[in-house]
Image 1 (cartoon, one colour):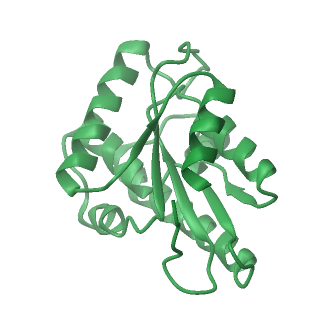
Image 2 (cartoon, helix red, strand yellow):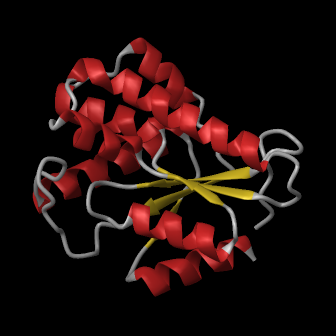
Length: 181
């Protein structure tokens, strides 16, 4: 697969999307290490850890803006590196999916961020790993399955090409490496 950056000289951004407890963070960090590049951790986790609560509806747009700003900062750091990749542990589109799921709507500014889904590759982490509760952020295995279905519906409705990565971490890494080869 020949990944194209959004603009010449910028890294090719790879979005890793998925419901809770699907291994997105582990996959993003592992791929970044393998490719000696940067990855953008999920800001939502930091938000929950810092505030001690799950987000409210009014928090969603700010969470997505912060995620994208951190992504942009990492992209600037990698600018000019030929063939650079930037692995993004989630994207504003995923925040919009959660807004749809929990509140039945997406605020206009978050819709605009969702529409700007300009990644060279979109990966979806399958919900086939064991579900693990971690306190505030994870609801249940049932919610994970329903969020996954919502994500696939949104990607299909928006015509966003994506690849489902499945199995344990080594299997997922092999799947991604085959795509990047």
